[in-house]
Amino acid sequence: MTMLMEKYNKLIELINNDNLAWVRHSGVPFVICPYKKEEHKDVIYIINKLQQEIESYHIELINMEQLIFDFIEEYETIDGVIELERSKEDIDMVEELGEFLLEKVRYYFISKAKEIGPKGRILVTRVGATAVYFNFIRLLSYLEGRVHIPIVFFYPGSYDSFSVTLLDKYKETALRALII
Image 1 (cartoon, helix red, strand yellow):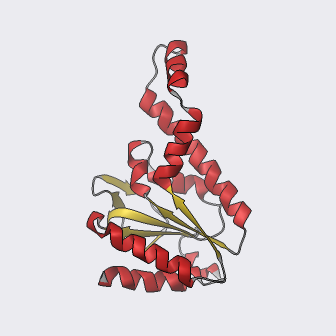
Image 2: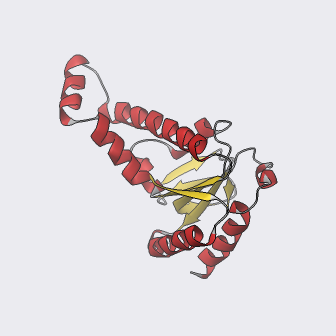
């Protein structure tokens, strides 16, 4: 918990900063806050504390897992999957579903950022849910230049100087986000 509290203090400093100069080194207002799977409950505590203590900004909390499941439920019913398989003989359903979800998630983040405006901040939980469907770095790459408010991704995994590893299994490189 000590390590997460240090991250919490850094997050408070970043989120409460109207001058986004802290992102100039990377050019994107994205923060990745990696944590170990066993720290999940502590992360929930940190998120709740952030929501309580940040008063000058609108904080939007996005549960990535719930978002993905909502899109699947809304757009990819069993009947829709059966119809898609009938209409195309050689289709990779996992890849098609992943691309579909990635596009929906991208649009959702852009719309949400515009909706809450410059006095908004987005906190994203359950990022590990993306691993099954799409590469997380692709989401961040697409959001570059399209989202101009800070987004903090609570990322279950590890990191080094050059990459992050989602769930300690899916290594992703070429990140421009600030990793704390």
